[in-house]
Length: 94
Image (spheres, rainbow, N blue to C red):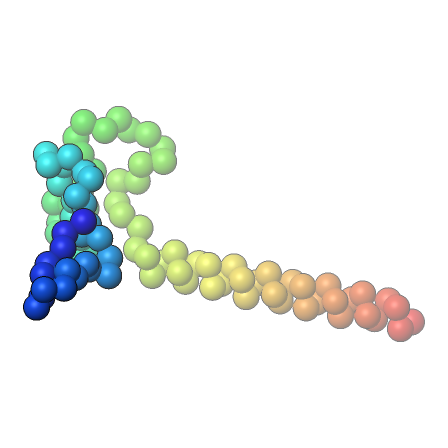
């Protein structure tokens, strides 16, 4: 761990310096850099060397579309549970 001296007192950082244990030839990217890189058109294209596998999509799926589908599914599920509860309550009351 890296230490510094200030007026005769050794100071240590609150957190150890990151990536000291990783090999020097390995490159680590920050999350912000990778997020910015994800909007570049060449990064969104499927590499040519990948086989045509059904799971690998030709066009990237928008995160908003996934979010929207999740919300719709949850609303349908809650609606279904609500009607199931109403039917159950109706059967018990009669």
